[in-house]
Length: 156
Image 1 (tube, rainbow, N blue to C red):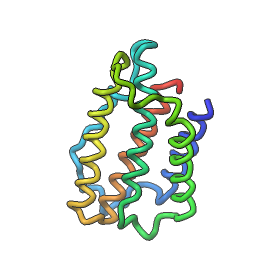
Image 2: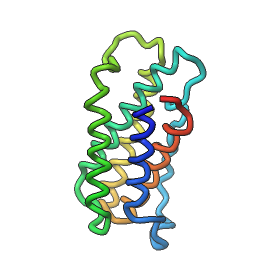
Image 3: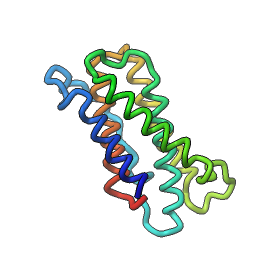
């Protein structure tokens, strides 16, 4: 429950960075599809894999936010709070997850591969677009979608 509460808070902080996507950025399209299946579970055996995928997603989000060129107009206090929550969730829970366990009964390896590819594509687009404000806005909205899927699809 604490994880879900912190994800909710981080979603609100991240959403409040700059409000709705600026009008001039509406034509920016990424064409990247979030692998929502990687964050969804059909049975209790998959719940462990989904939990691992959610935490790995937070790690990927943290790494993405370390890139240069974050828009100057984003609220630095809210951004720092968001990053602290992500770091806290990862550092407090990574040891309990067994992310390196060889068995893959929970489907984590496939989930991890899909999510890693998704985040690599986001990072590549940011770089390709030279970390423009519009590219960051699109990434921000993509990351909000990820947080919403984690919140809505899981009972973590």
